[in-house]
Image (tube, rainbow, N blue to C red):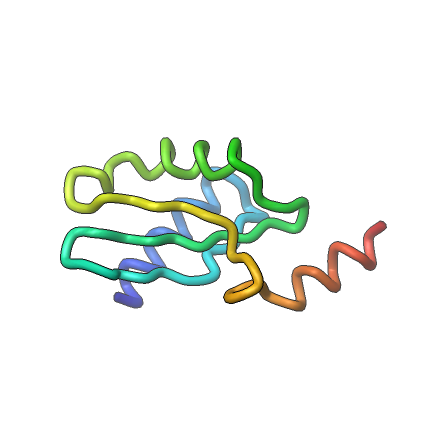
Length: 85
């Protein structure tokens, strides 16, 4: 799964270099849950952009994209954002 995660992160960097793929869960054989973070926050529009950018994965997986939330949130990204304000 690390190869898949690295591949997805590389594709996200093409969309927005500040996007961070925090975690990937594979709850079922054909499902992927992607948890993303961004220094400016994650909203529905960003999740939609990521889903559209990764639409080629839809041929093999059902795809869920959401904010990292408290479960996966990286504290270093939060600290960096506060430092730049």
